Image (cartoon, rainbow, N blue to C red; front, top):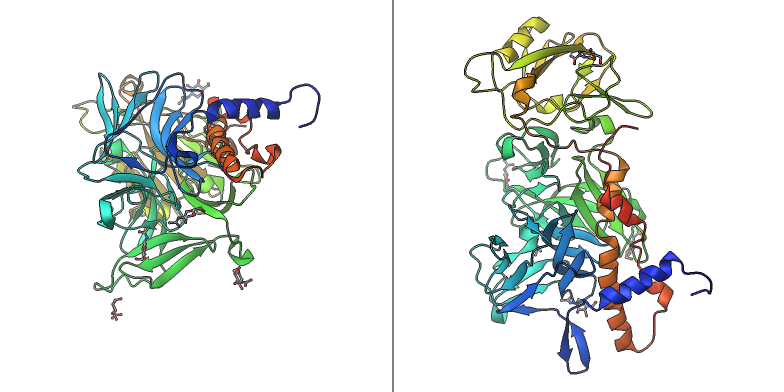
Length: 499
Ligand SMILES: *[C@@H]1O[C@H](CO)[C@@H](O)[C@H](O)[C@H]1NC(C)=O
Ligand SMILES: *[C@@H]1O[C@H](CO)[C@@H](O)[C@H](O)[C@H]1NC(C)=O
Ligand SMILES: *[C@@H]1O[C@H](CO)[C@@H](O)[C@H](O)[C@H]1NC(C)=O
Ligand SMILES: *[C@@H]1O[C@H](CO)[C@@H](O)[C@H](O)[C@H]1NC(C)=O
Ligand SMILES: *[C@@H]1O[C@H](CO)[C@@H](O)[C@H](O)[C@H]1NC(C)=O
């Protein structure tokens, strides 16, 4: 390093040295080695004053991944498998109840993995699993195994959170991919994959994107279902279950470049888009080479509930309810219950707008009517219906059987919308969710999650490797891309689409 006043790089390096002491080590014949296997009886306690956001307890043999405690946001604690060079959590346990990291949570392995908080109880576990050891494979798959290769009763690859990685099979029977904010999901059906919005705790999940495998035959009852797998050659392959017969592929931008040696992931981001990313040796950030949905206004909720997305060079958000007033989104709180069961008295007001449509109307049920009034009537009569958009040209009436999210502006006076709005006194009953944003800021914030802390753990690993190799990599090369300043964007994720 150059002489002169301290620069952030040095500070990062010093912090990293400090955190490096947190790398779990075991005594081996030729000195200390990072832990690569957990056995029955293992316990580790998260300490509230641990220096980093990520506290690894287990490493993969290739040193690229680690499993451990991850602090999320200002208070919650989770377990995660982290890609160390980028600090990105590829898998998270996401307990139903959130652990508060100021309390001493314990991770233990006693034939199953369990996260416990004293006085609160078990927050998460690998249910009904009996295993002998835990390892983190080179693929990032966290596995519970039986001795003598007698099987793998549990693996993180079969219990994904929001991300799929290379070689991970995603099938119709896999649990869905759920975005971090828990508002969107990716699911497979027999011949297609689809993105859904999740409402009322998952009881209502309208589809907003669907992709059918080209060579799958929906009418063939004996044909096995389709599953998907991310391929290192730069595509998401669709195959028939029980074999590797390919029925389609989603090619990424890098497919034609024959980019080998990149690590890839596919993540359902908090804006509801499904994106593929890759990381190559020496990368400073993940590069996206595929997204399911192209335009910001085509996303399901770019402007939040009752927002109006105006497409164009720079898409803009307005409010559906009051277009004249300069109210910036979020326009309304997210609704978490329907309009049924009010027991007398109208629970809602009505707003009508013309020149509106829905980005995902093709995925919605529709009826055909001669007039907009008839379309409205069919929604007004049903308490599960929150709105309807009518196309005076075709006569199609699309019914919104879930809380109203963002609608899209279309310069066509024949396209009219009818929307119910919960009356003010009713609104306190509704949830107060945040609207998921679509700005790059969100994506960036999630990319840098825990950067600095994990960089420390990664450097710890590298340091160990270097000691073993006796000399080798220079200091500068060890400084991983987790930038110091990135912490700021992590602490105040700006979730809004405005300006
Ligand atoms: C995992 O990676 C390490 C280091 O690259 C290698 O030595 C080891 O053989 C790999 N393990 C497997 C099962 O491929
Ligand atoms: C994914 O499926 C393929 C084909 O059935 C199989 O060969 C492979 O082992 C599976 N991968 C994992 C990680 O289970
Ligand atoms: C239906 O699918 C099975 C399994 O892929 C295949 O063997 C069979 O030929 C298909 N039948 C028709 C009518 O295409
Ligand atoms: C792509 O890379 C592989 C492995 O490096 C090589 O064998 C193959 O010929 C390459 N294909 C093209 C089209 O460049
Ligand atoms: C729209 O905004 C104006 C001015 O802020 C306000 O007077 C009016 O009540 C609003 N209308 C609705 C339906 O919220």
